Length: 167
Image (cartoon, rainbow, N blue to C red; front, top):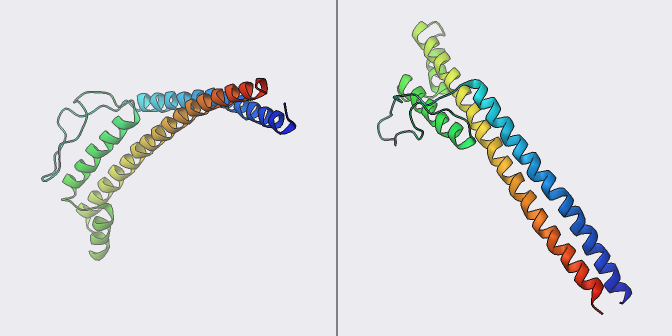
C-alpha cells in the first residue's frame, strides 16, 4: 500500500471513529434534553382548556381539551391559545398598544393598567411556552445530527478498512 493510501485510510478511520463515538453522545444528550423539557412542562401542570376563546378570522387552536402539555409542539399550540385569549381580552391590541394607550391617558387609568398587566402576563407565558417549543426543536436537531454522525462515521470506518485492505 502506498504511503498516501495508508495515510488516507488512517485519517478516514480516525474521523469515522470520532463520529461513531460522538454521534450516540449527541443523540443521548438530545434525548435527555427532551426529557428535561417534558419534566418541566409536566411540573407546570398545563392542560388545554375545555373551551378556548376564539378570535374571529382565525382558525381554532390545536390541542385536545383537557390534554396535558408535555411536548414542544403542544407548548407551541398552547402558546397560540394564550395569544388568542390575550387578543380577545385586549380587544385585539398588543401589550405595546395597550401600554401606549395607558401612557397617552396619563398613566392613571385603572382599567388600562389592569388590561396592560393581563397583556403582559399573557405574552410572558406565551413567550415561555414558545421557548420550550424552540428548545424541543433544538433537541430534534441534536438527535438527528447524532444519528447522522453515527451513520457517516460507520461509513468512513468501512471505507477506511476497504482502503487499507486493497492494494
